[in-house]
Each structure stands twice: as C-alpha cells, then as structure tokens.
Image 1 (cartoon, rainbow, N blue to C red):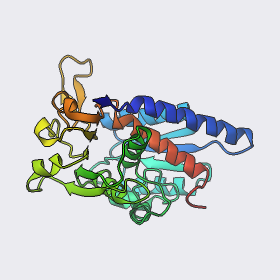
Image 2 (image 1 turned 135 degrees about the horizontal axis):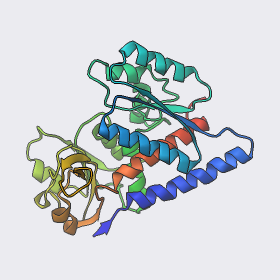
Image 3 (image 1 turned 30 degrees about the vertical axis):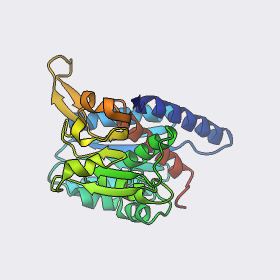
Image 4 (image 1 turned 90 degrees about the vertical axis):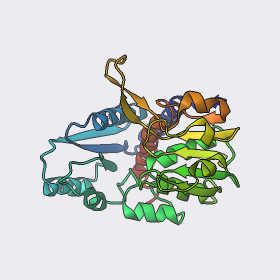
Length: 292
C-alpha cells in the first residue's frame, strides 16, 4: 500500500507557483490577487478561508478577506460580488459556501464574472469543462487529477467509480475522468440510490469516494490493488481532541488501506490539494490564461 501524500504534493506545487509569481513580478508583471468573501461564522468555512489566506502568502499572492455577518441580505451580497467583478486589481475571487438559508447560492454563483470564478462553479466554466474547453476547473476534482498524475497512477482505459453526484465534486469528477485529455477512463457514477453498490465499487480500478458519509466505504467494497481517493471531510465528535472533533473520511481507512495499491488519508490527502488548486486557478486568472 502506497500513501498518497496530498500535503507534501500541495507544498511542492505552492513552491512552484511562488517561483513563477516572483519571475512575473521581476519582469514587471502584476502579483496575482485573490479575494474571499466569508458570510457568518461557520467553523468549517472559517478554517477553509484561513487556510486559503495562508496559501496565498505561501504562493506570493495578494489576498483580501471580506467578512459579513450572517444577517446580510442577498442584495448586499450581490452588490459585493458586483464590486469585485469590476475591480481590476482583483484577479479572482470566491464566495465561501455554504451561505445562510435566506440567500440563493445559485444566484450568487451566477452573478460572479466567470473570468474571475476561480472556484470553477459558474455555469459557463462548468459547461466549458464538460466539453473539454479551457476554463477554471473546480478545485477538488482538479486536485484529484493532479495527485493521480504526480503519483504516476495509470488512468487510461481503467474502470473508475465515482461515489457521489454533487455539482462540486461528483459530477465534474466523472466528466473529467472520462475525457481523453484527463482521465481517459471508463466511468460509473454511483450514489445513495444505486443498486448493487458493492458490486459496482468492487469493479473499480480507481474508486473516488465523495458521498459525505463517514466510513461508508468498507473493505468488502474494494478490490485488491485498487486506488482509493477519499474526498470525505465530515467532522465527528472526538473527546480526545482539543477541538472536540476530528475529520473523518468516507473510507474506513484502517480496513480498506491494506487492499489498496494507493490510498489518500483524511486529513492530509485531497484537502490540501483543493486549496492548492484554487491557487493554481488564481495564477491562471492573473495570467489571463483562459479568458482575456
């Protein structure tokens, strides 16, 4: 069993990004600038945004954090998005999800200028991704593709099973894994209503678990020698931790790992790569790689 170290891989990529940024600046170019909008005080969102700000520092980016209380109106948030769209100093920005219930998340996502949508959630970016055109690809799927590539894990012609059908991970992951220039795999998407779920998973050479249910994937669902990518990050109570909780993946790691050729841990696997890919998208935005 080989452990896929997302933390080390992300650190290496951030060092590469920083080197490129310093070259751009030395040649008189603009330092990439990422803005993040955080609404309310959700613990998970606070942590993610803090890590994104730290990642900006590590990559040599400028960063701006805009905070609002959770009683902000939808109109006020849309006004903020409009200001960021028109601010030429901001290369890319994110509105941290989830948002309070009284705000329509999809409306906010669609209000973001797709040329600054470094999360890759705007329908234009999602559509371009689906047909293989250059665009911002959502960070978690892009991070998984990057791990597979950097670890030299063969994907072409392999059977890939994606567990989960969310717009953020499951759907784009399946699209990318089937595309010739990315995964070039034979892809099956499974979810909570899938029949013969264990049998489907057991056929996978590459199993990507993004179903949001702790310890859902057990040893009897994984074939010998498979690669298992665990996207799950559920907070579960843990009295032994100072925080009172620990992050738990969708895969029952201790049980599944001995059967795998490669496996990602939680934490330290896909999570660090997600933030790293946001940095890569911001670099692309600053260079106007996809859109003028």
